[in-house]
Image 1: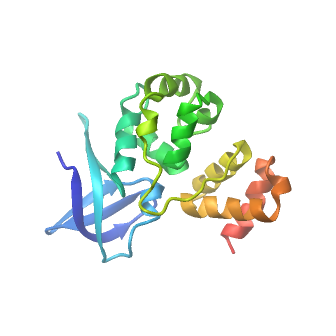
Image 2: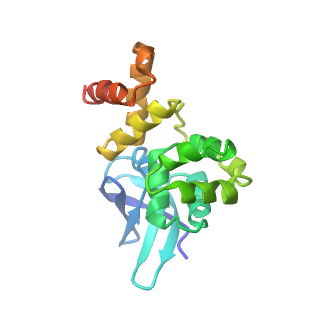
Length: 200
């Protein structure tokens, strides 16, 4: 199995990259948290990887840190969470916030994650709550302080779904909250203002 790759970045997409190692180009699916911290095209990059083998396909999933890779492996161990759903979860929420939601048994907040319904959220809590504390809080050496609250979660998730990187979405939401804290309880108003900030 391929656990680590180091090579030259020859292509960067929203959630996938091509990494050339010793003349071979590896297509690697990545969460936005990893895509956001990749170096420029043509630069050398290292990724910690998981190979997922199915009857009809083999896919590589890559992460900037071992903590992200461990979280991916942990998520996919839960019945109902496939590789792409796990990737979407890691793209939508920082590791520290995912850990806190699991530790707090916050079913409602977990249901706001992409691809997670009530039953899946309940399974996540039951199966991962005790393991959640092992999730590291740092992400690729660029840990950011997540915006807090349901409205902030929704605004960040909406920005990510519109194609913004998670780090950029969090930065925009935090900027709005710092300037206009009165909009903290309205996801719609927060999103509108964050869009202006992100597009500036």
